[in-house]
Image (tube, rainbow, N blue to C red; front, top):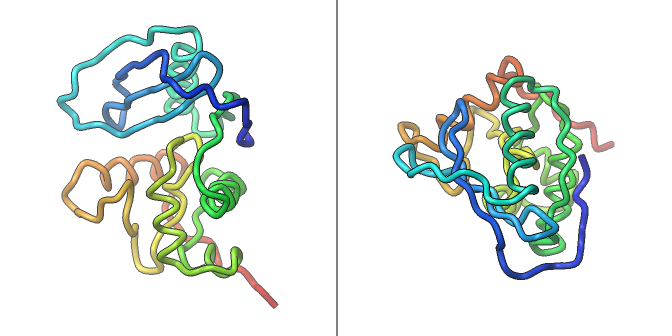
Length: 176
């Protein structure tokens, strides 16, 4: 799926909190686009989707959780800086079951690994835009502004990577 950029709608018109195999997820939609997905604490109260788009978003997230090859087809509201959108586009080019390191992504984008990590952390559409596929050279790295090994956010990253296939970083990209 590619980012689709409908006109910004401003206000969130529907929200939901759904339970997925990896935990609770908050869904925020305008009338015409997905505005934000957020990983929530495990004890966050559930709230059923209140609009057709939120229901479709929940259905597609569940389809992904049942089949990692599911291809999302949802309108995403334009968000982020130009650099963040470049990082998010790169994320969408990483196939399910594969990963890339922050450093390799930075080389490809002519940037710095820390900037790539910050753009991943700012991703409003995870797991649709799969920032979990960017990892550190020697392990998982961070996820959603967290590096706490015992926290629920890195547990979600681990689940997503295991769901898509064995966690094996791809070979470094040849930039010659």
